Length: 350
Ligand SMILES: *Cc1c(COP(=O)(O)O)cnc(C)c1O
Image 1 (cartoon, rainbow, N blue to C red):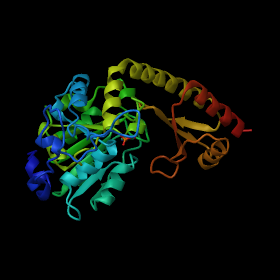
Image 2: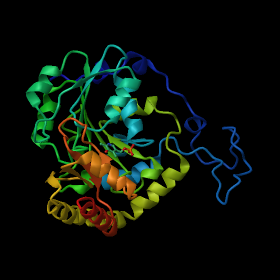
Image 3: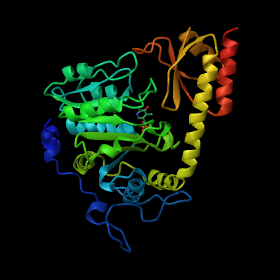
Image 4: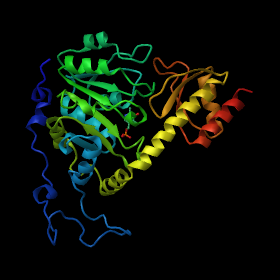
């Protein structure tokens, strides 16, 4: 395959002169800042947020670079992964002309974002083991296919996709392969980050919303070649990551050990919850999971879903999703939350 980044990028983006912020035009130290129309007096809070945040999130990226073993200029930070997803469409997909491929059942935002950006979507369903059907994907690719969305571990099935399959796509496809690794911290497998230098068409996405326990901050990461990151930087809103998020994320990264403890506890509880669920007569299948949730096939998904809601416990009903007949998606909770779920399921069966 011949990968030519400039031929993939939308023409208007290639030509775009990005907004130059006050902090772009002067980023050194000064005694007095009267350049950004901020309020020099402060904020009506215990702490001041009257200054615009670093548009390039330099400190945060520097720390992340060491943790993720990439260069700082291979990192893009978004207001949640959702912003990264949207930006990839806006950088690479011409409305009404280009198309992307998704592999259902998978994360809903790839499709919603395609619709918002008026980009055609081709669906190549996963096989019955929730793995990629490579030949069908290759058949679906045409001259206007810009992105292929791969979610691994996949949501809602929970499994990792075969690494060799993703590599095959990366080497055969001349567009961009996005590997969404939102759940990578719950696996034993290593990130596709390690292949960034090998594949110029690889974009890896991760998030602070799952293992890091920071869904409320809205912070998503994309890793790619510095050339791809530079294009995303050009298109993003200048101050897309706010001051509070930058500060708290940096603090969290200093406490990586706490994240690792939660992560290993969640993985342990995943195993025990799966075993307990399997003993319930109403449970047909608990699919193997590399994530912080279980896809569970039950006898009466809609009935159980409603019963649980009536008792104040909410899971995700996926029984109408392709290949997920009869399935609920259940997030791994704390030990007592998981026990409550099991107790209620016992109650539901009598
Ligand atoms: C939860 C999740 C994300 C995270 O999205 P954020 O916008 O970063 O919270 C991304 N991708 C998948 C597949 C997810 O399940």
